[in-house]
Length: 333
Image 1 (cartoon, one colour):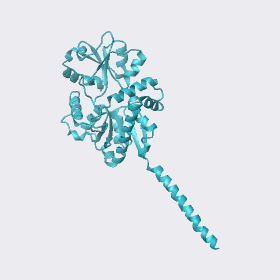
Image 2 (image 1 turned 180 degrees about the horizontal axis):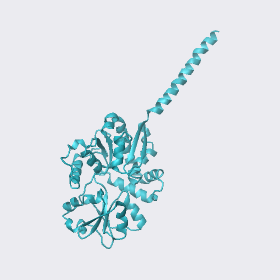
Image 3 (image 1 turned 180 degrees about the vertical axis):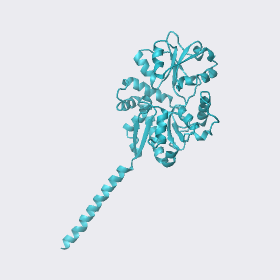
Image 4 (image 1 turned 90 degrees about the vertical axis):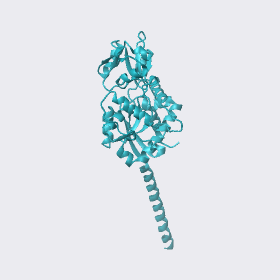
């Protein structure tokens, strides 16, 4: 009888220990915070570092479960963000600045491309290699297109007579075909997506004019979140941005692996060498400021963006620059 009395507490202790272990395991499983990330466009090499971070467990190491998805334009992605369907939108910062100026309650939380890597390509027999070469040329243009929407500013910065440059407005999908058919002399493309694809398909290295290197500073690749999420989940956003920076560091070391990681989620992707060229161009455009983390936002970049937008649309009195961004969520060095 005494032996039985001794065993009962023993079984009880074992059952308690097992229950505690189960609860601990469940608690660990619950510890990962979900972050829903929406791209403003379809998959492209610009997102390679985000998928490499996923593959290398950089999100998981920070107790995050990150779910990423394609988008159908900046307005739709921002709308989903405001509705609470997303936590972060990856998009060109210039569109976020415009939306915030119009009253949208969001902020840029990281700016990876202070200058969008956009170029004008031309035909080898009528090359546009210097800004002045644009005079006398026709350039394809579509509404909202980054590369040519601010052509007047580019002309002013480089002393070009813009009256001698003819912008031919057309549907966005028609720009490249019209260029290839030589209906226009130049068309703008992103180094990080369109350019490697087109050169691979055409088998041609086109003459190009780098707009960013010639004074057109359009803020590009950025992470944007809503004011509500920033207030509610600042620690989650901090961990996410820290993991992204680790993904950028890993991609700089091994762009091939980043391209391969992205392609696992990209059905119908271009060949790996093309995707890798996109990834490399994305990393080349990521600039860092001494003593600042990757993604640091300079107030001057926002002010310049507002000046650019004013040349293309009526925006009224610009909001205070601090309305547009925060650096508080970036990892400390």
